[in-house]
Every structure is written in structure tokens, then in C-alpha cells.
Length: 156
Length: 460
Image (cartoon, rainbow over all chains, first blue to last red; front, side, top):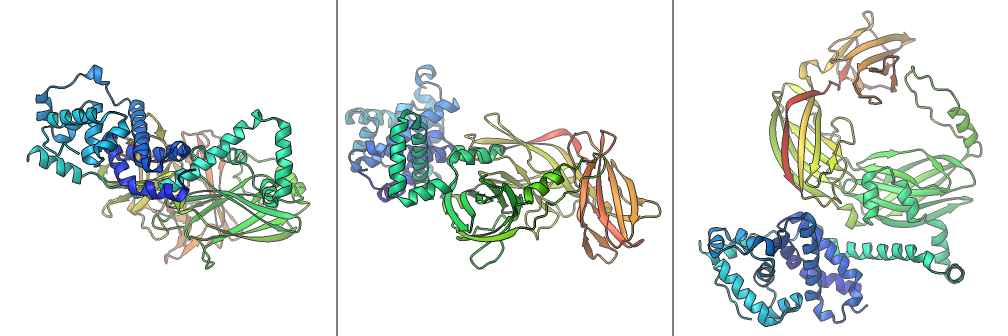
């Protein structure tokens, strides 16, 4: 194994706050968030041999967490597919408290706000996690900030 | 507040990672290792028998430790079998929630192996097996900390082993604040008696009188005792596991104020803590409460009545036990209350009048079936109306009292059926009976259904 057991534990411990916060914002429930992080760390350890470069541990485990959260939401049938729900109009976002407005964002924008602003992942890390070009992440980030009427630092 | 301020406030208000995450990585590693081992076991049929046999011979010959381990610890299959009738422990094993021990001690031809523990902050199940040249025998045990002090726990166990079979000892940590010691000393005395099985078979062959209250017959043994001591180290990853949910909800039921304090969800069971207003006119004896989660799973009580929370707790504090929802992925529980049983505070005690063959303040549905004085021992049989078959309530507390308030324990008490299918009997014995001297304490009252059931939502 590239990453020894003790290192795996240390790496996870240094990220657990961020991972939990991400899962909580994504699932909007503390119990489900805890279970999602539990499941993530189990899946990560089971497939640790697939992690070729230990320096990508953070983006790699976050990607696993996103998949676990998606699976959980699907299971709980709490999501309405974006295509069916349609994108709410700008006025809808303005009228809502920020927390609810974020929850109303299309999932692809929500995940970027969650990673970039609530968990301080860099643009490069976010692009790596989502397997998207950095330019696409930057565009979606701008769109999400505009919808939420947030004036936060948009650049790297 | 503008949007940016709102963002920073929301960010600051996000919950901190819970303490349960402290050992998540270690737990996951243990689980992954077990899962890998199990998957290897499942793949075994795919490997040719010959290559397996060759590997086995090499392993056993090269590594004595492997040979020892293989011969001693009973496999996971045995653990699955041992917990088959306990849905909570079964679920725990399915989630790889158990600690492997695999420690063996031998004396002459008697060998004891502690195989597994399933533990959490409220419970320990210890699994062991005995290998001896007899089919079965008796054992007794004690559990202490390293200073030889007993545990603050209730021990539930059998007293008989069958050779080669996984036996279970259950330890329930009744005090919410009690923590298992780092080192748990398991003292076990195993009796080897070649005549044990024959004497047990003879006892079992005695026909049972279905009308007479059941009296437990302890099998007797006169063989040789072998003492073993194991130093066990409960893994704190497991021993600290509990999800505690604060409820703190006061309600009034039939004029009595009751508070549901909290729900502790352990992997092995759940426990609902409640307390009563000390100004209530009655003593609460039972509440009909059940839970449903948002995935439709139902949780009903696993113990009758209200249990004390610890030895010093007053009668205003109690708890109810349920199956565990720990491994269920539900995030909401709905609690339903549809019945209550309570006794007026001024009718808690009954005075015995042997000449009238009566006891005062009999609860509704309870009558004195018979009262006989044999020598100086008074045998009391109470008859109780019941709508449920095979259901027995405890009617009196385990003690009786003299007029000065001194407490005496009922030596034995037992339950039995009667000729009437709608009633059952409960019998008690009072030694050294004297007229007008003793009183008993009622702890039973029939459940009164609520006209409007109470519903309370709690987030898991």
C-alpha cells in the first residue's frame, strides 16, 4: 500500500471537519452526514491501493464522499432531478434565506459553493474533485454566486 | 443583514464534527480488514481443494500460532448462529461490529476460549466456549476491574455450557455514567462432571405440573472445578459507542406530569429515560410507548415495565428498553404513547390479613387465589386477569416490609398458569410469618389506554 495505515488515519483526521461539513451541507442532516463520512472512510481504505499518488488523498476522498452523498440522497428520494425541477428564477433565490437558496441551487452549482466557500477547497482542487476543466468550475462558481447575490472572492 | 453577512453567519453556525468521528478511520480499517477476510472465506470454494489442503498443511506446520488460532477460536459462522435470535446483535455482526478476542487457557483436559465481544457504552456480550471431555457442565463467573472490584452492571447469563458451543454472557451497564474499565477481568470456574449429563436428563424427564407454579430446578454437580482468569481489553472504539438524543419533553397524561428526558441508542438496544413530577398523585408503573422511524421500522419494548436507571435512583426516574435503531439509516423517529399504568401513592402498600385470607389495596384485576401457612412460611398465590397469552407481570416488588419499615426479600417467587385461560397466577413466600406484621408493595396496575394517543417527533 502506498499510504501506510497510520498515515491514512492522520490524513483522514486532518480532513474530517471539512468532510463532515461538506456532507452536512449536502445532506442537510447530522446523522446522515456522520454515516456518509463513516462509509466514505471505509470505502477509501478498502480501495486505497487505487490511490497512486498520496498527495491526491484529499481530492480523492472528497470525490468518494460526493458519490456516497449522491447515493444517500437518491436512496432517501429527497432529490428532484434538475431537469424535472427546472431552474428557479432569480427572484426565487432573492426571496429565500441563504441556506434555503443554496439548497435550491442546481446540484452542479451547489457542490461548487459547498466545496469552494464553505470548505475552502481551491479552484484547482475543486476541478480535480469534479473532474472538470478549471474554466468550467470558474464559470459555474460565478453563476452560483450571482444567483445567490453573494459577493465573495471568485478568483484563485 | 446583507447576503455576505448571512453567508458568514451560516458558515460559523455549521455543526462541528461530532465526537463519533474521532475513531472513524480506525473503525473503518478494522471493518475493512474483517470484510476482506470474510470475502476470502466466501471465495474459498473457487480455489481448488487440493491447493487449499496443501496451503493448510504448510501454514499449520510452519506457524504454530496459526495452528493454535485455527484450533481455538470459533468461526464467525458460530457467532452468527449465537446471535441469530437477537435482532440487535445480529445486525451488529452484519455490520462487522464485534471485537475478536481469541484467548485460550488450558488446565489438564479443560480448555476455555474467549472468542468475541460485542460491546458498546451500555452493554457487553462476551462469547466463549469450553472444550472438555464431557458433553456439558456447569460454570460460574465473575467480572471485575483490575483492582478486583465488581462492575456496576447487571449480569444476565446461563450457568451451563455445552462442550464446543459458543456461550454468551450479557452484561448490561445500567448506570448511564458508568464506563467500562480499560482492563476487564473475566474469572470463570468450569465444572467437569462425567455424571452431569445423566443427572440433567433425569431432571428434565420429570413431568411438569401445568397448574402448579413453576419452580426452577438448578442442576446439581459434584465434579471438579477448574478456575480460569482472562484479562480482556475492551476496544474503546466500541465501548464508547452511543448516540444520545436529548428530548426533554414534558407532558401531562391522566393528570400526571411526565418528562421524556433522552433516548440513548446503543448498537445493542435503545433506552428511553423518563422522569415524573414528584408532586404527582400516582407512581408511574408503565407507559405504552413505541417508536417508528421514517423508513417504516417499528421499535417495541424489549423489557416489561419501567426499569430503574441505577441503584440509587428514586421511583420518579426510570427507563424503558427498545430494540436498537443504531444501524438503521433513518434520521427521524416518531414516538407514540397510547397507554399508562400507575398506582395511587396512598395505595402502594398492601397489609396481609391471614385470617381473612386477604391483602389490602389489591390493584384492579388482581385477587388472592390462596393463602396457606406451612409451618411458619406463608404461601401467597395471586390471580391476575390477562388478555395476553404467555404474558406475566411482576405484581409485587421483590421485597416485603415489617411495620417498622425493615425490608425482607422474598426468597422465591414464581409464575404459573391456571385452569382459566384468561388468568395466570403469581406465588410468593414469606418466611417466619406473623399476623399483622408485614406489608407488601404493589408494582402492578393494568394498562389504561389513552383516548388520544400522544405523538412526539424526534430527530435521530
